[in-house]
Image 1: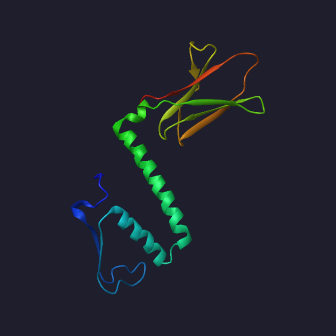
Image 2: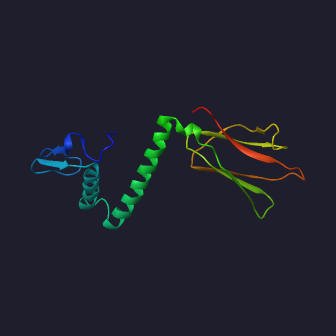
Image 3: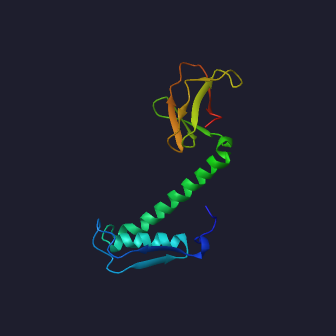
Length: 163
C-alpha cells in the first residue's frame, strides 16, 4: 500500500474501448476514458455503475458500502498484525460465566488462523494440561465445562507461539 488516498502519479485511469464488452452487452458505442484522483473516487464510481446497470438497488448501496468499508478496515488491520508479527504478542482474555444448567461458559478473544488450547489445573500454579490446539476461525472462541463434584479447576488459554 502506498499510504496515500491518491493514485500513484496523481491519477488512476481506465480506457473502455468501443464494443469490447460483448459478454455484458454491446458497448460502449464510443471509447470512454475514466479517471479518478483517489481510490475512494474509483470505488464510488464502481458502486454507482452497479446501480446504473440495474445489478443492485439504491436502497442496498449505502449500507453495503458501510459494511464493506468496515470489513476492509478490519481485514487490513488484521493483515498488518500478521505481517509485522504483533499477532504473536496478543494474549487471550478469558471470561468465565455460569449458566443455568450448572456449567461454566468460557469465552476468549482470538485471532483467525492462530491456534489456541484450553488448559486446566487443580491448582493455580500447578501443571496445566489440555486436549490439543484448535485453530480459530472467528474473533472469539468459546466452550462449556461441567464441574466434577467439589473439585476446583483453574483454567487458562494458551496461544500457539508459531503460525
